[in-house]
Length: 338
Image: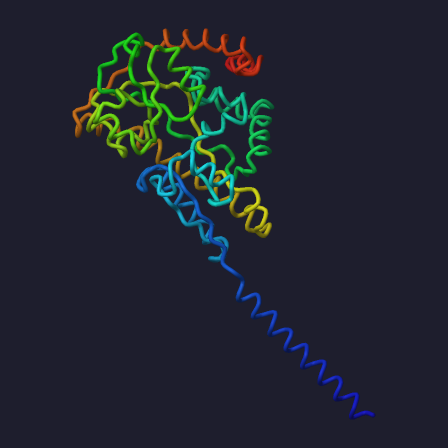
């Protein structure tokens, strides 16, 4: 009887050891998760370097269990296609400007209306309001996207117009074939300024300027040199039409499929990578205008913007009258500067 009891105990110990080994092997063989991140900017741009920093942080903090493969320069398609692919789950993460989300929130149309904000500090104040939070909650609900960043990727301190023709006053915008992206609010704003908005993919802008498809484009100052537009369009005009931010958008289903600790790492890495992006953007803002003047013989100019700002106030009132933008939001925005 004693011998039988000892045999049972030995058998139980053996089973325990086997289970222990099996559990150890299962943990060691944890599947590596690979996430596909796409954006439209060159690898050497602040966006490109910010994306790579995000990937590095995720790999480091998950001990290589989560890998972010970065595809720059529209390798996964134009921005609109990448966004839709991320919503469908074919792409995991889309890194691009907040301006791409206006179709799901009429409030976010103010991101594309020139001169609604009086600079970066004014814009940051709006980012802390109920209007802002409600707008992004609407976007998330309708698109199935999770925004990993804390709205801290600031796309350069200001924007520019790069043109093949001199622009001395706002009246010189009349009839100008201005490159725009697929944003109805942006198109309508440029029409109000007298230009002829022409939709063109970002990576086609250089050729479009060279061939005359468009006369001009707008750009964040931190992409002025890297995109080389001033090789074919020599006139650069200070044009702080609106502050911009970049959002790190991820497919919600894919995000929620990850372990909670990996989700936390993604959120933290996105915000931290935004800090590098901001540093690089500011550095380029200080140097790139002089570089295109020296290397491309570009002409940089600042013009009186009051006439443009006044026209946009009139346009916003027209937008409100037709309920194209929510009534009261513009007043809330303007009240933040008082």
